[in-house]
Length: 154
Image (cartoon, rainbow, N blue to C red; front, side, top):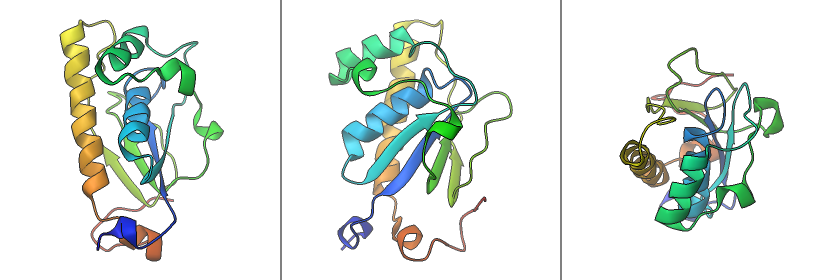
């Protein structure tokens, strides 16, 4: 039996970057697509852009049939609920901070302004990382909120 079969409570995961316009939006969309029954997925940033990166929107539609503009918008950190897990995208500056029980940095380069091959590479890397996130045993967070081997932030 895995942790997903032992509780009804879905963990809340937030994908965070500065502008919440590209990588974090892709991660939120893929998390919803791949793990809607496992996680409540959010993305946010310390600043927002007027719209989601249009190359990301186009490629996510081509690769997965996901129209991010119909289901998502750019959000500030204050616009999302408290979360259990925070994933920073690799901000190349001081990444935004958000209280959580577990934090990871995925260290992904921003593909903005680059070609489709670079975008696709980042999208596929995010897909792989989301699948790994799904496979992790998060039961300890749901039961007691603490695990001695992980870093917690409040």
